[in-house]
Length: 595
Image (cartoon, rainbow, N blue to C red):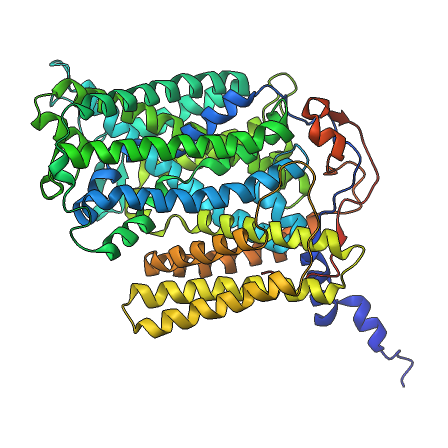
């Protein structure tokens, strides 16, 4: 009418995408996975890292990440409640971490020697969105943790400086002791912490060889001091102090295990150094498990010494180990403990910054973050842009805010990462079998069983935490056992060449259950943090990630699984620099949701 043209629905669809098409694009992007082929390992545009880390370097990397100043503090603070039974607490927590380490070791041996760690494993086993969620939870832990450790390191450095008369009581708070408070405590100025972060960032930017040398030296220093502490304290042990062994009951020992579990967190850092390992398929599994076992032995030794030297009731709160040696007239050992604390915090901070930059590098390569994070310095062979970014974030947090008050919301990322890695072991073995024998429906059933185990573990943890009727915890355990039975008897699993996690699916399932049990023991604000950060991460993915993780890009990273013969002879592992037009991402027909 009137010479005008009617606007059709088709025109409307062309003018603005419908909500169904937006959702369809989001879902197809979110459920993409990163496939593995059996050809070599390749990176594009010459942006590969240099392989310089041997097995010994990797073991020290894991020990450096795991043992900080906590070995001199947390052992005594937990012993105040658990008594000499704190030794059993560390054994139980160590055993749980060893099971998690076995899962990491299998995937580190199986996957291509490139950066990514838990993020890469999740991307392959489940889907793109789940991997991005894991990255988000891990990264918040790393950022806040690095800032908090930097503040603690600054405080220990000032404490050592004040041993000299010229500095004693002459260093203001805004330099390093806690921080100068402004705006009612909203701002807490600390100058030394950002300076220390800047120095470590410079070391990391110079190259992995230099940073590995610093880590090896500081970790060796730390281990030597811990051994001196153990042997010096052994001559002061009174075995009568070990009786009663669990004065407050076994529950305090079990509760202590949930606390000291986090003292072992850090061995997973080894998995993120795959692209810089000389023989990744051989060395990574050995380094992951070896570094953790070293930590278990050192922790147990310190526990036996501290509970044998002083009755557990008289252990101090802030510096129990140093106080114990001072009470025996061994003040020089207390000074060594401060030096060891500085070395421990330095290595923990160094490795934490290192891991963060490699995770940013992996996501930058995949397009989930801006490509600037994927750039590698042509001469230094380090991701300088990513490294500087993580240094700036940690420096701002450490220099302006009292991040110690956020410590109760940490460890969410570690538990999330460990749980998803354990689930990835089962899911990938199912997926390998599914390619020839098992339907996608069976794969989904397996993933649902894993989800039920996770929920049961969290439920059991909640019931234990709030002292509800014992029957509720028993029901949660029974549900988890039924889900495990379904995994054992209704599913078939592929055999893995190279290192294989024993007892699949039992070992990974136990890991998931216990990790979620520990998750329930965290502060309730940590649960809120998990939910809010997950929502924010999904939002970032919806507005940026899904559009920039381009599967048709001509130059992109293709992650390839090394063939079986290469995995048995890791020296043959290499990086081929090339450009490619292969599609690295595919839609996952088995994915049902972002677990």
